[in-house]
Length: 200
Image (cartoon, rainbow, N blue to C red):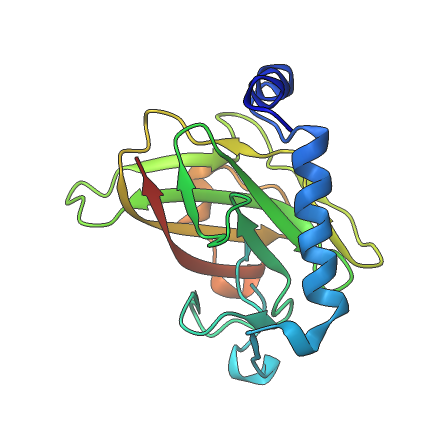
C-alpha cells in the first residue's frame, strides 16, 4: 500500500483503525495465538496474580517477559489484553500511529479503561484514553477469542517522545475517571501496566 493511500485511510478512519490496519493487526494476533511454538511469551499462573485485573486490565495469561506488571495481586483474565501500534515492537509508537487494544474475550470481558503517564513527569499528568470525560469506556462482550477493538487511540502531539507507563483495565461496570483511583483491586476484572515508548 503506498503512502498516499495510507494517509487517506488514516483521515477516513478519524483516529480509529482503518480496515487495512485492523486486518493486519488481526492477522498478527491470530498468528501469535494460533502458533504457540512461535511465541516468545511465557505463561503466568493465574493464582500468582490473585483476584481479577487489565487494558485493559493489562494482566496477562500470555505475556512478554518483564513487559507487563500486574498490580494489587490480581487474578483472572491473565493474558487477556495486549496493545499494539502495528510495529515490529508492538509497544513502540510514533506520532500519527494508532494504538490498538487487543482483548481475548474468551477469558475476560467488561468495560475498558486506559491512560498513560510520561515516565519522569513529576506532576504525573495523565493522558486519558478511556473513559472519555463523562463517558463509559468501550464494552468488551464475552466472546470466543481474540479481538482488536475498533476504538483505537491516535498518538497525537500530547505524546512527547519518551517512555510512558500505560495503565489499562477491564471493569465489570463502567467507571468514571474519579472512580478509578477509588476502586478496590478486586473490583477489576483485569488491571495491569506496561511501559511503552513514543518515538519521533
